[in-house]
Image 1 (cartoon, protein in one colour):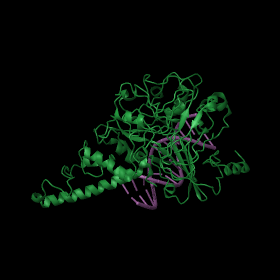
Image 2 (cartoon, rainbow, N blue to C red; image 1 turned 90 degrees about the vertical axis):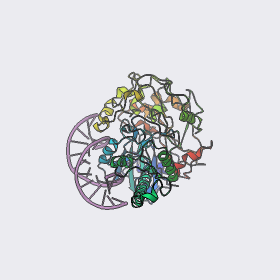
Image 3 (cartoon, rainbow, N blue to C red; image 1 turned 60 degrees about the vertical axis):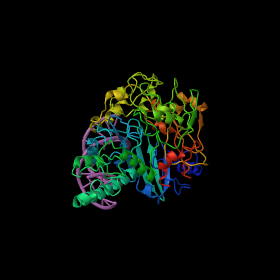
Image 4 (tube, rainbow, N blue to C red; image 1 turned 180 degrees about the vertical axis):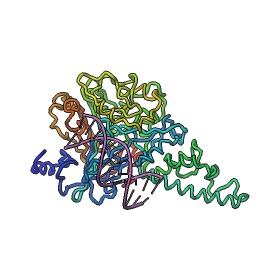
Length: 506
DNA sequence: GGTTGCGGGGGGT
DNA sequence: ACCCCCCGCAACC
C-alpha cells in the first residue's frame, strides 16, 4: 500500500499514467483533476471517475445487465453481470442478427423470462451467464467519494451485449402504447364492425390477433423481444423485426452487425474502442482476425463477410506457441470447444483460468482443451463452484459449441471513445515480478498501436495467473484509462454510423 | 410487476 | 478476511 505521499504523487500524473486509486482504497483521490464521460458499456479492467452530478453514474447505470451484489460494504456498491439471454437455437432474425435479450435483474422475473420461448423461432431461451472475471461474473464497483463517483470494473464480458436498459424500457413503453392503441382500435371495431372491417388506423394492425391470447401476449412483452412499431403478435413477423430496429435506431442504440453475429459461437464486442496489437504472431488487417470461422458454417455468411470488411483499426496478435495470449486472456468471447477447429489453438491451457467459456457447459472440461500447458493452473474448482442450478437448466444442445473455437479479439469496450485524445497506456501493477519477468518478456517487444479514436488500453498478460494466483487479478496488470474527453466515436472507414447506438447519451 | 439498494446469512477459500 | 451467492425487504417507478 503506497503512502499518502506516493498516492498523491501518482495522482498528479494520473492522466495517462498509472491509476493511483483502487475502489477499495481507504482514501480515494481528493478533488480529481479530470472526469470521464459516462461509459455505458464498460468492459475490461477499467476505472472511471465521474462527476457526482452525472445522472447515469448516480444511478449506477450500465448497458450490461448488472445486479446488485452484497459485498457487505456500505460505501462501495458492487454489481455483478447477469450475462445475456439468447435463443437456444441461435436462430437468425430476419436481418441476420441474433436475439440478445437483457436478463431481468430480479431473480423471479428472470426465471419467468427464461420460461418464455424465443419470439422468433419459439425454441427455448437460455441465459448465458457472465464468467468474465476468473470464472465469475464481471463485477462493477461504484463509490461516491467527495465530488466524484468512482467506478471500477473487473473482468471482461465473455458474452454478447444484451439489449441495453434504455432499449428495453423504450420497447416496453412502446409496446404498451401499441397495445393500448390496438385495444382501442379493437374496441372501436367491435362497436363499428362493418365500417372498420379490414381496416385499421394506420394499416399496421391488420393482423392483430385477439387480445385474449394472453399467453402469446405475455411472451411478447416479457421475453423482451423488440416489437415496437407494430402490434404484430405472430412471432416470425418481419415487420416486427424491422420495426424493432427502427426503434433501436430511433433510440440511438442499435447493434451493429458484427455484434449481433449470426454465428452464436462468435461473440464480438461492439467496442468502438479497439486496439492494435502487432506481435511475432500473425497479424490481420481485418478487425477480428482471430475469430476463426467455423469450418462447418458457410463461408458465405453475410455477417461474417461484413465482419471481415469492417475496418476497426484492429490488428491482432496471435499467441500461438507463446506463453501469453491477449485474446484468450482478455476475451472470453468464445465458445466451448470439443475438437480443434480452424485456427484453434490447442496449447493454451494456461489461460483457461482467465477465459472460462461461459456458454452452456458448466463443465470446465467441456469448455477447454484438456491438455493445458505445463504449469498452467486453472480455476476449474472456482468455476465449478460458480455453476449454479439456475443456469444448469438452460444448457443447450451440446453440439452447438462443440466443433470450433471463435474468439473476439477486441479487449475493451466502452461506447466512449474520443478522437484527438491521447491514449494512455500503462501497465498497472507492474509489481508482479514473478509474472512479468517469468513469461511476459515478449511484451517488451510487443507493439501496442492504439487507434487514435480509441484510448483504451488493454492488456493482458495473463501470466500472473499462475505465478501469483493469490495476488490481484492478473488482468488488472493493465487497465483502460479513459481520458474523459469527447465521447464521439469515429471510425476512419466510414462505419462510424454503425456505432451511433452508443451515442445516445451524447 | 420490475428495478434498485440494503443487509442478513450461508458456504467456500 | 475475503469471496461468491442466495434471500428478503423496502422504496421507487
